[in-house]
Image (spheres, one colour):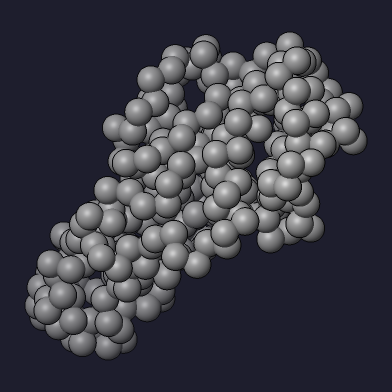
Length: 290
């Protein structure tokens, strides 16, 4: 049996920029939501998940914005896309999918909390995380918990994470703290590039284990003395960046695994949504009804 955990915010953004604009009969923008519904119905039909849940950023800001002023905000989100956030949650529920709308936390934290809660469930063979967010690579565990980039059809097991980043999944927060993550507004430490960071973390695993003086390093890396000096001068900031890149596992995910079992699309609820949004041509897309 398998569990699919979906980054709904990413899926909504992907639909917005990949589908033409569309309006409901009352004038509301629904292009992104329409694309989201079609994408999720395709996943349900082709992957046949036993269990499924979808996490959304109900608002863009989270507790991380209180920790660091430079962290990502809703600035720059197109107005017509932002207007579809709540509707996206409603539309996803109409497919019989459990929805977690995050306010204080982020969607990634909900996914991390669910993965931590259920990865050892005896009747669960695999957890598939549907996202491209680099911080979610931290959750990959051998081939039992994997990350799936649906757009490019790439699946990341632990071996693929090491191949891409040069570090194991448990070092991803340290990697992002040192290299930076422009998507989340994390600047990183000066001169710490992808190759040098992977080399150092392959030796020490955690940022906290890296000796302050290069003379104490047990491996050789190009420009190592400068790297050590820059990390020493920015260690407090680097530790903050690691906190920002570390997913929380205490987000409000209260359901049991059985509660997120997919039983099919609720017939009346889904048809009412299609009527409300003027999506007549989507009415026959579900392959399985409750």
